[in-house]
Length: 180
Image (cartoon, rainbow, N blue to C red; front, top):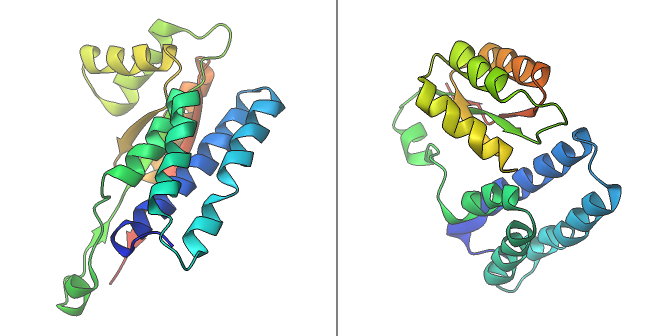
């Protein structure tokens, strides 16, 4: 088991590992590297189901992935930093709100990635400044997976399409929860 206060974070981390592994497939990564990631990740569900505390082993496994490939730092961050979620108390007290959490994971510079094109598409689709767009572009060029928060699914799809047209890879991570 993973300690109860880390359980949801562990699930988030596992989800991000699987998303990034799929991402590696989209970018045409060597299948042996993808298999290596999946080999490391296959023990994580067993840690979650174990009757013994395996929190430290879970984190160590995710950290080992992040040390091999910096993009998996995104999965490690999901485990280390609590993700804002609604509590059952809020639901019981009648706090009925819609919370939208959608990210577009941008990474995997393909041969011929247009640095200027990526920066411009980020500016246009997200309406962000040049400096912020350049920071994202530079991170992508360094091989990092960058999670860009967007306000809705339509914007996520526009961004993913635009990013793909300039030579990067994008995957939409939709963690939307509707309670009401």
